[in-house]
Image (cartoon, rainbow, N blue to C red; front, side, top):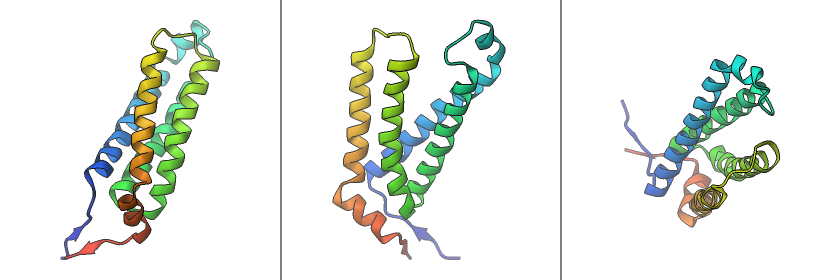
Length: 141
């Protein structure tokens, strides 16, 4: 049996972990939306439990798939990660500004969004990462 070794930088490992954490956060949103469906309907939550469950399910699936692709060094995951990072940050702020009540913690949320987005994009566009995903091969021993 051959052992396959994939060379991953620590930033790619951290990016994959962050993707899993975002996916798990959305998994929690999904479970809570389903579990408290009747309560959310009773209090006329806006935009409603269906939106919460569907959006959480989409981000859960995309996050886990992208993290797996990054971990397995799949060529498609580079593109998916870029789209996911930009898409998630955009969705978060559109959702926050349009569908939610105003929050006092917007400076923290903006800072966290910028740090996550800039770290993710700088990792994905670094020459080492680009070379890693353009090869789409494994180092075999």
